[in-house]
Length: 491
Image (cartoon, rainbow, N blue to C red; front, side, top):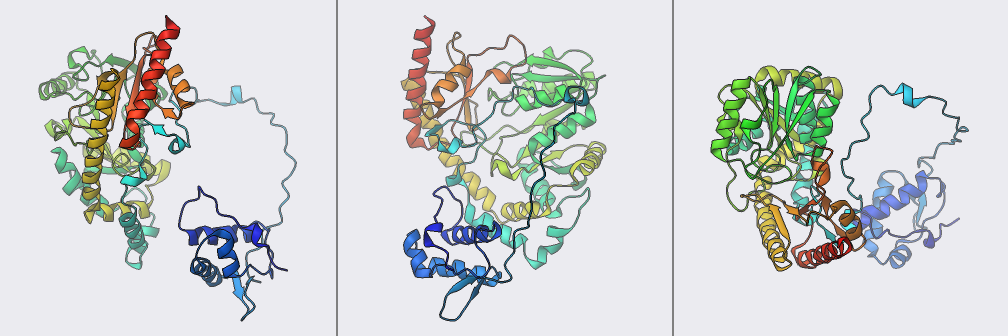
């Protein structure tokens, strides 16, 4: 029996090469039980004509499936599903029972209910995605990342790929961070003072778990990164939010008996304010007077295309009270989930032990791939390209904002990938965002970044890392029109 050529079709949204898509399509047909052992596949010419691809592409896909024993070749007769092909298991799911657990009583701790805004999974299908923290595939060096990943899969790196490091990290990645990344921020650290994390958020969680509890007080910026606020609230510490100004966190406002201070001095999240040198000194002095620890989140220092970023607060630290957090998520891609903690050895020792209890260590292959990508110079080259592109997008965005007379509340001094915007006070930007999404425009409402119950609702964030420069003016035009409509409805 021959499998009809009409059974096959290519998904226009599928990822990977055409050859890989055809291989996957046939393998899934076999694994799902739609294609049976002994069934004949369409000829390579016939399938190529049907799919609108070259015959060699189909032939290569068939050859790969033949090598993996999904298919077999019978002389001049063609390709057939192999007798050794995997057979889908016979499985009939049992009847679903009735859930009789009282989860209201059973759940001792709850982690839902926060107001972290949800980002559409299909954000890339929106024409004007002014959305923060997503990767633009046109800016990423896919080819060299792939080569580094293949190299990390080689026999030479078999140990790095397969070993359970337990509480340790890839020495090549640690060495690069110590010798190249940290010195660019004015920081010196030994390997014992560096820990790889699953992104900056995981680093913030580790620091919170180690440093805070119900009897401790933490100061956090207001507005701030909303996920950090959720993490701190889970620790049940006494949380003291401090409203930031144009220079970031005001040290003189930090209350007595503060134990930990969370700050983003180089690029305040989300207002993008940069803390001046004098205030950084004052913050360190205030922390010293209180015998407090500072957790510095330096999440976006690589995005510096307007001017060189200020030296990290950690570089000014002389008594070990600053814990530094860095991340590759913004400069490479968010799905990488690689960040790092830098701090005094006693703190890193505890963070290493806690990480080992929860997840052992980030995957060895990911660490080794990143180490190669960084050490071979691909990372720096990508940062330069990204800086040039983001600079052009930033100029286009600021010009469009000026044309439409929108108000910028914060825009950073050395670059970044977003602007902090202010709408008229009567506008609720959550409603504005819902209205704009229907027109293919994505913006980020600002209210979730604020702490108080009387949080302002008229701020919003515009990111430009994921939208082409050519679409920015029209997107800003849509936002301007929506704001005009909102004001008219209010009046």
